[in-house]
Image 1: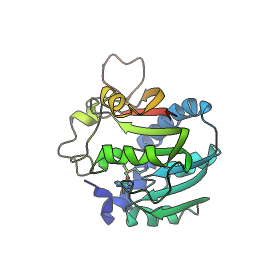
Image 2: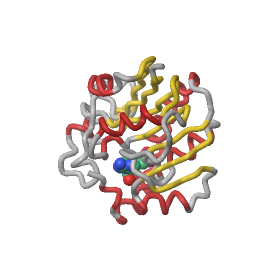
Image 3: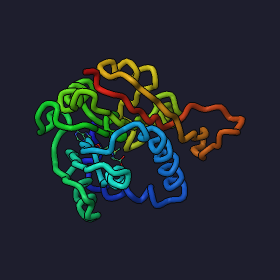
Length: 213
Ligand SMILES: C[S@@+](CC[C@H](N)C(=O)[O-])C[C@H]1O[C@@H](n2cnc3c(N)ncnc32)[C@H](O)[C@@H]1O
């Protein structure tokens, strides 16, 4: 279920990234991709579920040429105010409005959790991606404290989180898969560092993989 169609959810989305904890989370997540993207040529990229453009800006700064799509007009309105150097349009990732084999890279950060049919979207990604093209995906981990305690949350309650094992299974049409983990929340949602004695599963999973020829 896509709660981001609602104006009140969309208009509060970027506020999180302005909080101290939101800034830390975003830095940790970006560092994971900084490492993974070393292997990926910086060509044209389609970003699915670009939302308010948080990650669009990051990918542009990495050297990609961006096209972003999202189904939420409310999220896109906010992205448009940022004057990003990207083509941004309203479209559904279950019916991507581009030809087969048209992008060398397709990214999507925490969108698959909110789509109705994840397998359908993955088929679409596979169709639109060029042979040997790269997927760059960010997931919220079902095994994390957030994943285990999301039921009553307005944003995450109805979302379908995956865990590393399920992600591996779903990406069977891709190879050279690499995963990196980060953002360790305690049960009371403080960010833990790597030396903490409290053992929890990571919240964020960064993935890259390549389309088989
Ligand atoms: C958690 S937000 C993530 C936004 C952005 N990627 C980020 O990380 O800041 C999920 C986004 O996915 C979008 N979305 C959900 N289902 C979609 C679909 N079928 N096609 C395109 N976008 C979709 C939502 O509208 C929302 O903007």
